[in-house]
Amino acid sequence: MAPAHTNKLLTDVSFTLNNGKKMPALGLGTANMGPHMAKTTEAVIAAIEAGYRHIDTARMYGSEEYVGAAIKDVIARGIVKREDLFITTKIWCTYFDNPAKCLDISLKALGLDYVDLLLQHWPLCMEGDEDGNSIKREDGTFVFNPNGSYIKFYQKMEDLYRTTDKARSLGVSNYSNAFLTELLKVARVKPVVNQIECHPRLPLKDIVEFDKSLDILITAYSPLGAAGAPNLKLPLVQELAQKYNVTGNEVLASYHVQSGRSVIPRSVNISRVKENIHLAPLTAEDLAGLDQIGIDEPHSVMMPEIWAKMIGFTTYTK
Ligand code: NDP
Image (cartoon, rainbow, N blue to C red):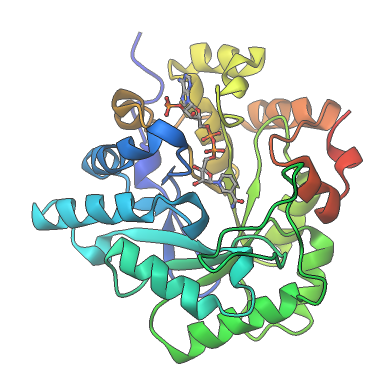
């Protein structure tokens, strides 16, 4: 039987942002932890060689240096030019008063003059040490700055965007509808993207539909359900993988791309990075079935305390 996936690659799809720029639908996530971090450069190189053009990083992950080394390598070898790549980074919440400082550190680490997309990592203002690390309480919870304003934080990023050429597009991450509504009352630059946790166990239909109505593209993070990739165990994901002769990873990425969302799965396993690039031709019925999993039994993998502050923890877990 000929594979059902052969027609189209996830790496061939791109979306047009509300500022007219294009964003490749499939990006490689790089929030690698512990010993996996050192494998980031190799994974990014493998991804770009396999046709990915979009890489997602953040100051907070500590992966920018490794991503930068990969970019330097592929450009030096003539595999791509800088302008072929779409690099996203994020301003961490401890830099709410001075995002310019964070961006300069990021650009230096990446070895770049500009990023394609700069995101506000969370609509939160946190206390940090002099290196920008969040100060945490003994129980591991973050300390929020009582006077910080996530809107002023974004407005400082707007200033950066408007007065420098260091970020080609501006966006947000982890925004609920209430936070976005407040921001849009004063924003001079509409975010092009809202990057949120989104997968079959957390379809967040209310955010997805609201952002779509505003022409703000959703980028889905933790598509596999994060460490251990628990979403691969969902029976419907396995059934669809068999039906379309693709991997579970490809079903979970195609779920977003077929719904008009970009997606940034993470892996440092080189064969997974290279092989999981086929678009599964999921039908409207398949997509609805995947959504229904999280409508029936929502489950977030993100830090509960953050969700509690953002949109109500009890809404997303049992
Ligand atoms: P993902 O849902 O992408 O899952 C990644 C994990 O799945 C890795 O540990 C990977 O291991 C594993 N995995 C992948 N395929 C398989 C497989 N076939 N079998 C077994 N394990 C597998 O997790 P993330 O939470 O990292 O989300 C993706 C990206 O989204 C991040 O890297 C980051 O860039 C972004 N993000 C953004 C956030 C934000 O606040 N804006 C928050 C969280 C993430 P292996 O490496 O061995 O393949």
